[in-house]
Length: 163
Image (cartoon, rainbow, N blue to C red; front, side, top):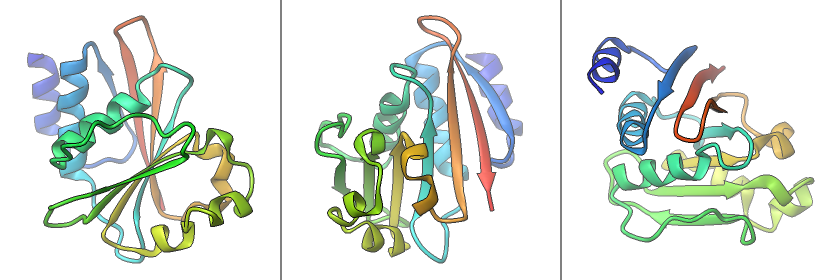
């Protein structure tokens, strides 16, 4: 944890960084620092694309972000409901939107969830699991967080800002 703490002290931005996570506590610490350094997008929702296979930590990362944003509800993967919206009392964001795009493959599906409205609101932070399925509908500017499974408890997380 000391190495991780030292690493975050010199971490300046979210562009092109890779960090190894060895526990849920370290993931929570990473999520806190990620959120602190995330620059809200001024022309629409702040979008974070979460990439990785099943069980690599996408939903757990979202739960950590939700905790940092003081969400009191239980945050679970919206696999079957596709999208969950959490109201926030936060100085920058008013809603956390969690989308699981695994079952989506077209804009018609997205339209059912008022996708344009969600994406145009500058006070929304939107975390999208399986973003590849709706990649052509994502805003040009977003952040990609890629999770790589190293072992049962270890992950490598890569962060890239797309502009």
